[in-house]
Image (cartoon, rainbow over all chains, first blue to last red; front, side):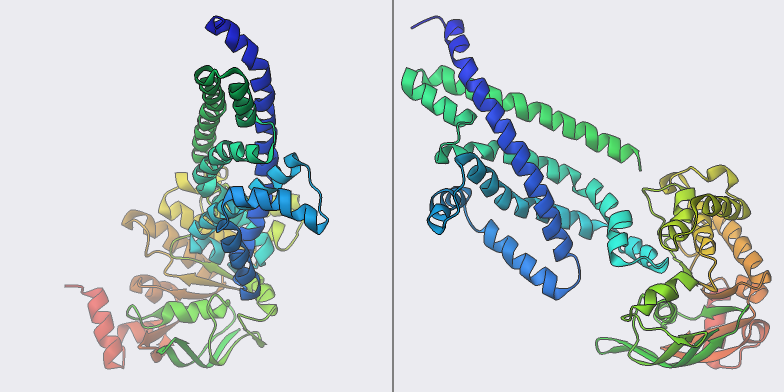
Length: 218
Length: 243
């Protein structure tokens, strides 16, 4: 076998390609999941049963499905219903749907943790629900929800490896293919793990910084 | 100005207001006193629809207060509220807190709102704290910002729910003196308070609530110095001679 450094050099271009795809899947899924999660949270805290009921049902429904099954369903079943998606699209949508539930619950926790006196003060100056949410509740809820949201981000990044099962060539998939063609399991998967850590460790550090800064602004 | 007619309110099976009849006239300061659990805060919160009531009527200049009707938003812009725990918006400065309502609810021009907000903050003695966040202010300072926030709405009346109960003793005086000034300028105020001394000096009338009923009401000097009802006598004895 070639020396370790040469092999690493051989593997890195493919793995880096996978790494970028992992980043792309994660960012797209995160944006979608956050937007959708905010919708779930706002519906669930609206205080109107015809909004909060259905939202709760959808969240519990989606959350009860394993990510792998969701991905298989979107990638293999939807085409039979006439909805053709690329593996990349299916992967992003599947992750976004599942994570919208986790993130939605995180946001809901933040909204519900805002002191009741705040909504009363907002109401007492004549604010309607929408403006109260935008100007008083959400700015405070975001601060409260930030640490668990950061956890969601890291979990989503790691769970993006699951889209490899529907042949999205992200980091884990590239690693699996490299390993099976070179039989150099140890080097390849060590590199894969290291590359994930290159993303997750800085991400955690950034989150800590943001939390500190937001805490200081109070 | 504010008229209560046979107001009843229950939380589930617990009846907390059992037929309240009273009136607050324009320019009058009325203090609501009574033991905890007597329903005074609940009564106050019904006036701007933070609580609903099941029977009777609360009317502000003839307009019925209904917590579930769209008109409640309009009513709340005319009847300001000061809370026991201040409830300032922690993510906004003192000045922004005061500007919030006129600017973002009433939609008044920003320059004018800012001038007025600064005036109100100066008037409550906080000229040097305009850009401070609530967390950096003492309780008494926060409550004075809250009073400025209420005044900035140019309300017809201000409701105050135990405005000095959550304060450190040394900051109570500043808040009470701001309240007394407002009373002397004939701001219409309904104040739930345990500060008997303040009620005696600043209030025009006093309502004594016990067990969800108004037991006694009248000019502050009469009710507080020579109460007629035994329950009022007993209550005043306890709060003025606590030992």
